[in-house]
Length: 253
Image 1: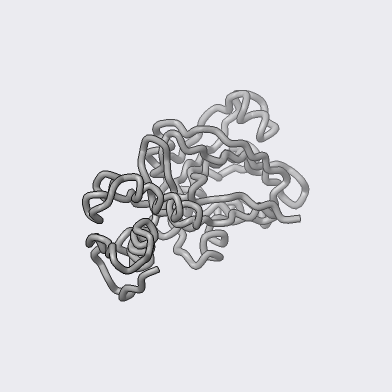
Image 2 (image 1 turned 45 degrees about the horizontal axis):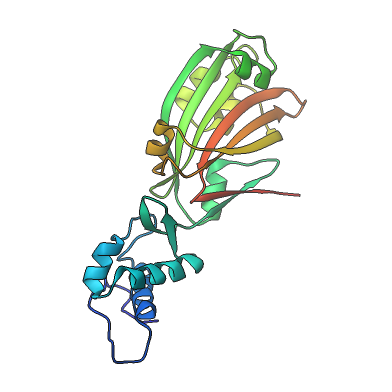
């Protein structure tokens, strides 16, 4: 594989050397690998098409395809049928434990956590929410919907539901601080822990795909979580949506 300066900004696209005895596809794979390592092709971005790479390197598309297959096997490139090839992204381990907190999860990977509140309001609980919180259908609940980021990449779309009658002042507490731990403490919940987590997978909705910057044909991981206080009373039921190219869920023993 080729070595290039670490601060190189422009991708290498010159024709391959047909005289040095190294297979053409290996030369192309080496140059693409060097471009990825230098940051010329950033994680998550789409690579040029096979036709464009063929023209840039002066080879046929079969040779380019062989190079991309090799990079895919090495985990550097993700090939999506009908969409093209993308630079693979760092996968963050989302460890499900007794006290999983978003900020701690992201900081553990040496990334900066941030979030955008998409909605914060009080609504009547439908049957699904009521079952999750163990309240009557129609009871008032506070919903907090948030899009979470690791650095500048979206990694989670979560909806958190809280029993408004059980946690008086929760809406106002979240308006002061969107940090759930702080808001619960303001409502008298000094500590809370994960009681149950369920994980499934499905294709994202159009809105989810746009917010998480993922393809509609790439599955997302979906979680349902129940959190309880020290007395075992449910204080939160939440659902989460995570893009599989960036997040994998790991359960602690």
